[in-house]
Image (tube, rainbow over all chains, first blue to last red; front, side, top):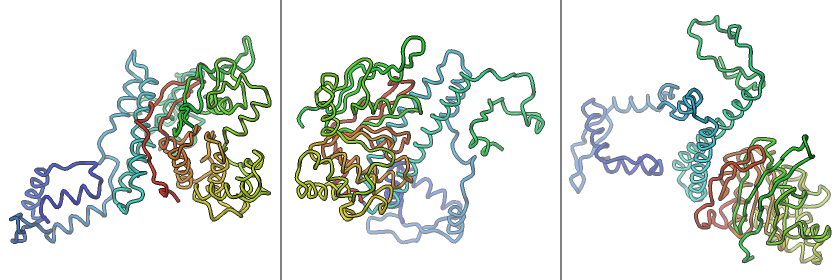
Length: 195
Length: 243
């Protein structure tokens, strides 16, 4: 395959959600070649484009990539969680307004994705449908997290102030206890997640 | 059908009790549902979603403001006229127990038409068409307990929109269904709205609300936000886009 083909294949599978600049593709190919993961076949097509193929090392690398799950730290940091956490601790910022503004925006995004899905559903483009589903589930999870955060804040606002004297349960486990997050006895699902 | 607003809430409030113990279930709600539009109402429990739906369907009366169904202010109607609007202009889909267990799917859907005065044979024909439109044409002679939850909800949607009815009020219609079946039901609702019906949908599932043209958020009885009216009507599904 040559560079344009690679880009085309990538965008076809992902519905052009993450557009690739063809320069980026060629730079990456050059690096892969430097590292011995791809090689030129020596032939070129009728337009004189250089054709590449995977080397054995490249095959091994690719197989390893598919076989390795993403770890929690492999993902970009979550700017929304950071924003909400900072909204809570920054004076004069209405964290509930931050949550609501985001929820409306995320719902709008979810509507757009749903429209795309309604259009794509009849097609045979399974790869694109999977990518769309992924984005839909992510947006949905975000809305659920926003709802959950709002409920948590509402409970905190109405609950009698906890006596802040005693050490937090479990604080003996380590000296660097995380900043005290109010415990939420009503929420079983949280406790299951908390280590 | 050319009157654009199928349902209009104008400054609607609902107070339970009075004096110091008064509870404001809804405050100053204004909302217009147009032909072909599906609006989803989201909000935590206790935010007034169901009260809103009851007021929209004439099952409850507002303490303030007005509810107009197809241009008629429900407050101006006599009891009998109100019952007629409830029966002829709109239909309901609840979370479950929508269908009469002793009647087949076709009989359930035909029933409102027979009550409208349509002869049984014609009513059955309409019911069969309506069932086909929601993708369960082959289940016409099944009883509710012989159908899955998703199939029953499709039948309930067909019944809600049979004959002249153009407005469906749906209260958590996917609440008892698994995720995929729930989505299929939403597709049916979406397709019926694209075909000219109007829907007001209460749901707590963002993924289902996202099928709506517009999503509004209720908090403590007030509308706090709104995704806005969708761009000009576009048909999201082709006629056979479901099933």
